Length: 371
Image (cartoon, rainbow, N blue to C red; front, side):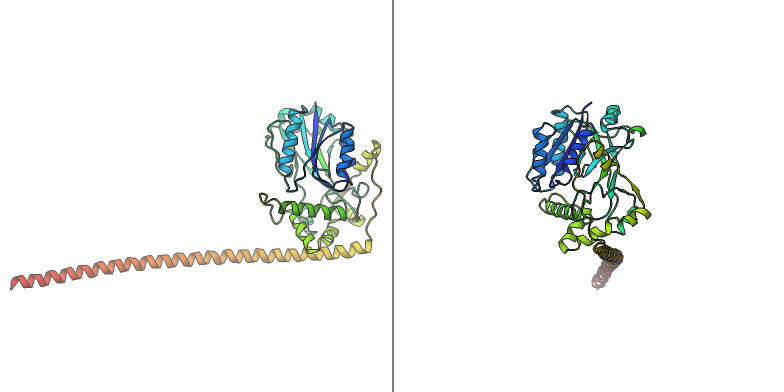
């Protein structure tokens, strides 16, 4: 059994070394990584692994959110060039983990029935206190189990969408975001072989600000992509443009009090696993000032409340617009009906008048003939 993992990455130097070593330690046979013109040292770190024969490095300098095309090409390469049996298409902030922590990925995929085809894997966000920079392996150790309503109350739309895992196929197509593939699901994954993704989407203020700017500009550069205005990346991009993103970010992060009393579960798996494999971790993060974070969180939540009120007004206006449109449509239909009735009466009147004229002419003609 050959297990391949692909990733398209850009400016992920804070986590990319640990991401590569983690998946190698989990028994991944083939790593195919496309660097998207990183400028923070990511490409150089990947080149180190490539030079040692530990991964296959590709380069793509285009910045147009072309992830679907690039990942599809890597997934097909996994099948045609490397003879993979299974393919996982991941991001650099995603760590695929067996639910049974005593197993490794290689053990799970060796037992998975390939007739399953493709299946989805839940994605769990790991959260914790905010820091200015750093990867957060020691800090982001809480499973975010907030409901979508609770997330929306701090400016986040929803929990993440599950990722797709699939058998290798030279004709596979991977959709933007790695959530959907062209291979159908044909069976259930046994509970003992279940997987999940531990996700580090918001590692630090510096990382999230940079990621937001890159994502927004990437979408702007590609008119063929039309993300919803409510897409999480585009929401953050507009916040970044108006200079309020840091407040929104502070609102979504979790401090120790939140973690102790809220819907969060302690999840130290990543730092524990890295330590057990002798995988070095970055220098511990310097956390942001608590008083400053508290101020920013208050501001962020006030902005979220403002946004909610604006959305409510927009919904009310849209509903009023729909009602007005329907009323206008009713008036138009009534006017059209009245116009048609008027035309019917005009035609009837004209016909009546013509019949009267004919009868009058006939009467005159009759009198003339009698004389």
